[in-house]
Image (tube, rainbow, N blue to C red; front, side, top):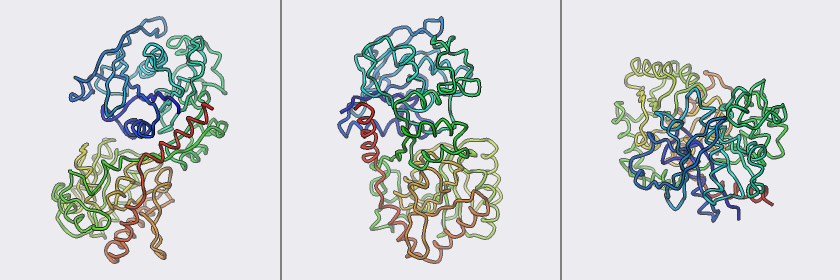
Length: 479
């Protein structure tokens, strides 16, 4: 069984900005449960580190990492949580900030992080069989192992797996960093290596140099090999398709369980859905909408173009004018989109509730209390919310791309099959038509609706199956 070091820029429950943080929590736990030896390494963002865990953090050692010509302090801290060992890379110049990302020197910050990981392994006496890397923040490590740390005998057998959570974010920088940060020379700066339109691309480097590459759903793995979804890396991915695969993300089914969720006004199961009406009324009250028996459509999302929020806004006016339905939006993001949803709330005060904030408890209540969960994403590598909604018998309405296509079976009005609703043409009129079809079914055929709810609650979206597939990749690349 392979020994794994899981490297990422974020991990819940310490910090997360999206799906990467969720995966960095759940997948290592699932691997450990499946008897894989695994440890996790993440930065120590001191200002963001939760207070309840601070007294459990222990100092292990410290050393200096040479960033270009400058020696930089590197502290290694550790914490054990749920039986897992985490290493925390500490440098307050780089990581003692208000946010995880979005700084002018992110390239330098994560160059340091990657070199620190490489130099840490031997010092903490944990040299893995597999370095499991995640997104661009760690994707340059396979190059470093070959070009900078090749002289360390113990590292020569390490294999690398790169998981791409979102191809849109690549880590693109001026090639001067090869000397000013990494001190590795220019021998890999070519089209088959790390060069990208005259720049250095961390993610491309990982795709070309890692032993295996995967994305977080099978459909996304195919989509990113096309110009439409490939973010100018489709040719590189096609060239590496022999080592590229897609593994569907999972969710923590114990956490997202309507039978035990303490955030709910009433708990329920697929066999007894009646208490879900109590949760619906509680949700309507919580967001200031009338407690009417009308279909409730909901969004829990970052409010961005990628998540299809502009498409939803374009479809919403014509929909609300003719439908007795309510729409709840929870999230933050693009200020223009935030304001647009507030405008809709003002125009339709009895139908629209715009909750422009981040609220974990309210999100759980929305999964349980709404009827239809909207995910009209332009693209979606995996998506987690559609699986969470299905666990609660709330039917997802999705754009059939990426992980949404892999997890949601569109309703078939002739056979009754399905676990939600889906559309392919990315147009406001098409989205509005599918929303109308969904609320019409809710209003006119309660028996068919309940059958769909029960079908949506049936699939097992736990991490166990996904963990087994990752173990298979580990075995393949180390054999």
